[in-house]
Image 1 (tube, rainbow, N blue to C red):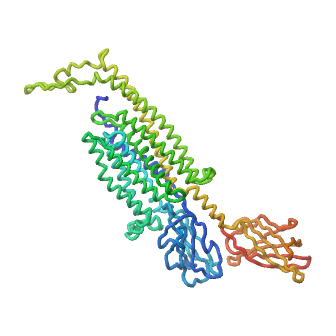
Image 2: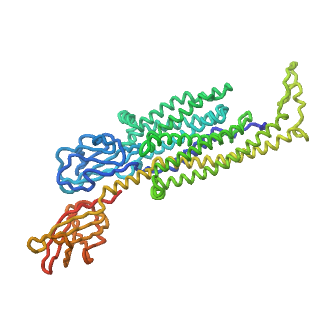
Image 3: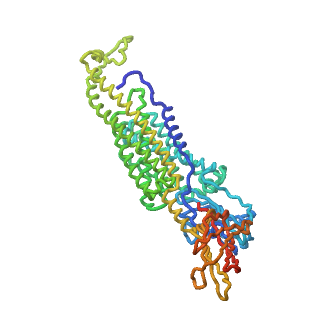
Amino acid sequence: MHTGPARAVGTPLTALALVVAVFALVLGGAGPAFAHAGLSGSDPADGAVLKAAPQYVTLTFTESVSFSEDSLRVLSPQNERVNPRPARHVDGKDNTARVELSGKLPQGTYTVAWRVVSADGHPISGAFVFSNGKPSETAAVVATGSPDDTAVGRLYGVFRYVAYSGLALLVGAAAFVLVCWPAAAKVRPVRRLLALGWVALTASTVALLLLRGPYETAGQLTSAFDPAQLGRTLTGRPGGALAVRLVLLAAAAVSLRWPARRTADGTGPGGRLRWAGALFASALAVTWAAAEHASAGIQVALAVPVAVLHLLAMGVWLGGLITLLLLLRRRGSDGQEIPASAIGRFSALAFGAVAVLVATGVYQSWRQVGSWEALSTTSYGKTLLVKIAAVVLVLCAASFSRRWTARLGHEASPAAAALVPAVSAPERVRVAQGVGAPTPAAGQELGGAAEAPAADEPGEPGDTAEAPRFEADAYRRGLRRMVTAEAVLGVVVLVITTVLTGTQPSRAAGERVAVASAAEPQAQVVTVPFDMGTANHQGTVQITLTPGRVGENTVEAVVYTPDGGLATVPELRLSLTQDALGIGPLDARLKNLKGYWAAYDLRLPMPGVWTLNITVRTTDIDQVTVRDTVRITSLPG
C-alpha cells in the first residue's frame, strides 16, 4: 500500500462538485410537461348555439380527475361567474365534472374555463365557449398555455428533479455502505454524501408539499403558505404521498447513524440492518410510484411495484457509482484505499441493478407507449428512444468498468501474497530506556525491526511488490475513468427519466386522439326539401360538408326526385353566411360533375352555426331558394 506522504484527494469539494454536476445536468433537461389526460367531450359542446339556457355544464375526460372549488368556472359575456356552486362528479364517475348554472341566463356567449388534476398527479386546463340564444361579444379572458408554463409550475419542476437526485444519492450511498464496504461509513466524503442526499430529498419534499396547492389551482406563489390550501393538499393523493415521504425521512435522520456505529465497533452491518434499509428505500420509492404514471392506466397492481423496483435500481446504481467515484479519488490520512473486494462486490451489485433497470424499463415502455408507431409519432416515444440510446451507452461503459474491476481483483491476490514477507513486522519487545535516550527512527521498532532488509536490494521482497503495486494503480486509474464516464451517462439517463415522468404517455395520447375523433363528426350532412315547380312534387337536395370544421372543406350536393331517384337540374348554387358575426355570403362555386355538384376548396373561417342558402334552378325559367343551418366545429386539439 502507499506509504508516502498522505494527501486528501477526495475532499468535501469533490462531493459537492459531483452533486452540483448532477443537479446541473438534471436541470438542463427540464422541459414543459404535457397534459396527461384529455377532455373527450362536453355538454354543451364547444361552439354550440342553444335555443334555451342549459341547467348544467358537464365535462368528460379520458381518465379520472380530481378538482378543487374553482376547477370549473362558467363566465358570462360580462365576465361574471354564473355557477354558484363547485364542481362534482356525475353519478360517481371519476372521469366527469359537472357544475350547476344560475337559474336564468341572458342571451350571449359564455366561457367555460376548467383546470383539473389527472390521475397521475399532473394538472391540465382548457377553455371553450357556447352561446345561449345567439352569439355575442364576451369580456371573459382565460389563461392559455401549458399549466407548467408558470412561475409556480417551473419551480415545482425544478424541485421534482432535485428530489430524484436526492433519492439517488441517499439510496446509492447507503447501499454501498451496507452491501459493498461497511468501512466506508467512517469515510467523511461518504458520510457527507449521505447527509447531502437526505438534505436534498427533505428540502425538495417540503418545497413540493408547499407548492402543490398553487400548482394544482394555478394560484400565486405567495399562496403556498396558506394553511387552508395546505390542508386541502394533504387530503389529496399526491400531497399525502409527499407527507408520508417526510415522515420516512424524519425516521431516517435517526437511523442514518447506525451503519457508522456498527462499523466503528468492528461488527459491521447485520442482516437486520440491511433489511431495514431495503424496506426504507422501498417505502420512499412507493411515495413516487403511488402518485405518478404507475398509478394510472392499465395494470396498476403490477405497474406500481415495477415502478418501485425501477426507482430503487436507479438509486443503487447511480448513487453507488458516485460513491465509488469518490472513494477511488480518495486516500485517507492513513493511506487506506477502497479494497478490490469492495469494488468487486459493487460491480456485481451494479450489474444486478442495471439488469433490473432494463427489465422494468421494458415493461414500463410497453405499458406507456402502446405501439411501435407511437415511438416515432409521439413526444413520449421520441424521448424514450433517446433514453434507450443512452442506456445502450451506459451498458457499454459498464462492461468496460467490469473488465477493469476483474483485472484489479486478479492482481490483488498475487500482490498481497508477494507483500507478506515485506510487511510482516517482527514482534515488538518492550525495553527500558534511560531519560534522554535517543528515540527510535520513524517506522523502526526496537528489538530487531531496524535490521529489516532494504526493499531496493537485489533479490529482496520489495522487487516483487513494486510491479503488482504499479499495475494495481494503473488499473485503479482506468477504473476511475470508466466509472466517471458511466456516472455521467447515468446522470443523462436520470435526466431523460425525469422528463419522461412529465410527458404524456403515448398510450394515453392515442386514447385521447381516438376519443376526440370519435366525438367529432367526420362530415356534416344536411337534407333540405324544395318545391320542384310541379303540383305535389317535392324534391330534396343533400349537402355534405367534409370534415365540417373550420378551414378547407369539400362540398358535395345531390338532388333527388320525390321517389328518391337522382334529379338532373340546370343549375345549383350554394352560399354560406354567419349572421351573428356578419360573415358572408361565401359562394361555394359548385361545379356540375354529371350526376352531382361539388366544390373542393370551400374555406370556412370561424366555428359556429352557418346558414346555407341553396338555389335550385329546375327549368330555364324556374328556380327556388331554400335555407337551412349547419354547425361548423373548431379545429381539433
